[in-house]
Length: 126
Image (cartoon, rainbow, N blue to C red; front, side, top):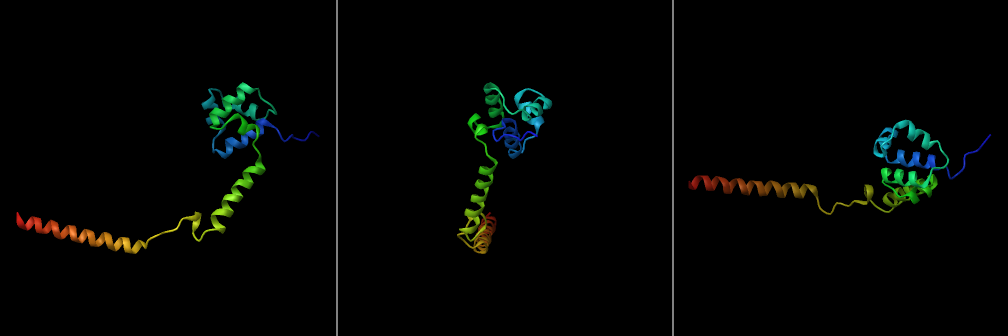
């Protein structure tokens, strides 16, 4: 039984397409071809450089990104983002609120009240 090689370009294209939430039909349309051609390409272990450049452009990546794509690197990247965002911050995704939202609401209410009083005064003067 043949074992798949680590440098299966078609499989890398498929994974990048999936990570970009793109269907084969959408990639085919971007490349001016059909879904069957994309399926065949994704099952190919190698593709020519010209086609790789065309695919990379349609996926919004560089040909080198496809060639060097690694599932392990993607998992490691997302794990690092998760670790950095949640272990080093007190809030979700590292966002910190620097004011009390209720204070801002009361300020807006007071401002509206003053505006309304000025409007009433202007109407009385007419």
